[in-house]
Every structure is written in C-alpha cells, then in structure tokens.
Image (tube, rainbow, N blue to C red; front, side, top):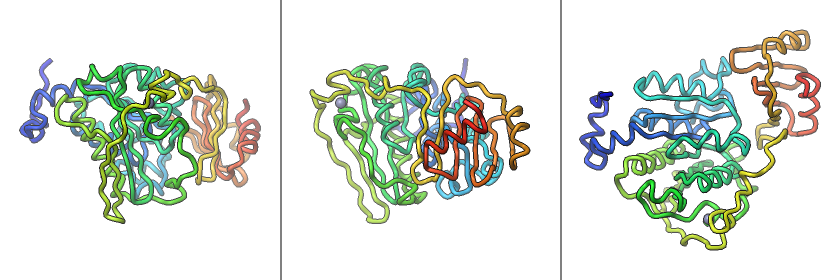
Length: 348
Ligand SMILES: [Zn+2]
C-alpha cells in the first residue's frame, strides 16, 4: 500500500527524522495507559506525528474540572460524561484519519495488562499513580518492551525512558535501569498528588512533549534518547537532567526477575481514589445491562445512561457504572460503604 506522506512534509524535511524515520513511525504501535492530562497530550502529539496505531486505555470519564489541563476534551465531553478514551479517540480521528486508534474503557490492572500490551512496540505512562507505573514496569520487563515514565504534579514533572534488556536489541539501544532500580522496590507513596497539590496545564504539555519526542526517537530509530531522568519545575524555573546509576543487580524486578505487580491478585477490589472523595469498585467477569439497571434505579433518583456508562444520583452519592461492572462511587472515601452501596444498587 502506498502511503501519502505529504501531510508529514514538515516532519520529513526535519533531518533528525527524515522519510525513513517517518515510515517507521507510521508502522509503529503504541499503547498509552491513562488518558487524562498527560496521556491525552501524548496521544495528541503522537497521533498528529503519524504513529500508526494508538491504543488509549482509560477507566474514567471527562469532567468539567479536567478541562484546564486536558487539552483534547471539550465542555460537551464533560456534559455528556463521555469516557476519556472514547472522547480522545474521536477527537484524534478528526485530526488524523490515516492512523488507527483503539479506545479501551477499562482499569489497567494485572488481569488485563499483558493482553493490552503484547502486540505493541512501546508503552507510554499517562497514569497518575506509582502502583500502575510499577505494573507497567513489570509488563515491560516481561514482554521486553521499552516504556516511558512521565509524572506531573503541581508545577513540576519528571520522566525517564526505560529500556529493559529484552528490548535493547529490538530498539537498537543499550538497556537502562528499570523503574525499580531507580525508585526502589516499593512504589513511592504519600507524596503530593494532582488532587491534593493541584496541577497547571503548561507542565503537563511540557512533560508530555519531552516524552513524545523520546517516543519518536525510539520508534524511528533515530536521535539520542535521554539516558537518565529529567525533572522540571515551571514555577521555580528549574530544568534538570541527571544521570541514574546503572542497573541494580539486586533489583527484584530486572535483576531477580520477580513480577510482583503483574502477579498481584486482580480480583474484585475497591480502591479509594485519592483526593476525589470517590471509591472505585471492580467486579471482574460481570457483564451488565446498563439500560435494565437504569430502569430499576429510576425510582430512586436521577439516572442517565449512554452507550458507555450509567450515572445515578441517589441520596448524596453519584454512582457511575460501566458495562464491565466497574463503578466509581462519589461522595465517600470509605471502601466498605462504597461496596455496600454497590451491592444494594447494582448487586454483586
Ligand atoms: Zn531494575
């Protein structure tokens, strides 16, 4: 098949990439885990640059208070409560209809992580928590895939390009330390989050831009990747890049081959969503008929349903339910209470 490269003309004449680099980019497959602020900016840059296939995974829906930093979404997306993955895919198809975009409305967890990543060339981190990043690290080591860490809070952000041993030959680059080599065997906890410390849009797009450029270098096989971490603060005007020590031979993940985050129990669970006054409940294996549940709940409060989700306002709670059984219950941070509300209104 002949591909019309004319839309990428300004990228082709950039000697760093060139036509050969562009063709490699067009044949590459990327998964972006999390499609909020960072993930949607990454998706936007790479869709427009001509990455051939993008899988966008996100568990959440667009809300009005996302719009100051989540560049892809509109007020209409928020009013209609559209899932971020679906809204992002639609907007990006309008920007580049030559590439393939697959939205996945799901929580990326140990149960689906391999299935969602085994057919791609690169994993990008658009998540907001270290638990999921440690899972991505395990998946990347297991499948021999490069991945790029991107974290943003308040006015600062950091990132790193991580190339496991098993990916080094594929991408023609030297292996790097893994995330556990750099940050230790346990996910750093208790730090500030976007929900407690806030976040501004410019740091999101800046960090996404650095990671998108790293992705373009990796996938095109051109240019020098950052070997170390980058860290920037737009309010303190600090721009730092620092090397990291080599691989840690005792690293549980890349040294001893443990995959603790990938083998974790992915069964039914409830997780308090930090700072959001909400709890997420998963109900693996469930297949719900949202219209049927909507009819049942209509007597109890206001219920709206669309093709992706159901939203019910009952007493002081807002229950958002997806067809795969997952729910986000707003109005409490107590997992037990959330589970009992779920059992009462949805059933489990
Ligand atoms: Zn390691």
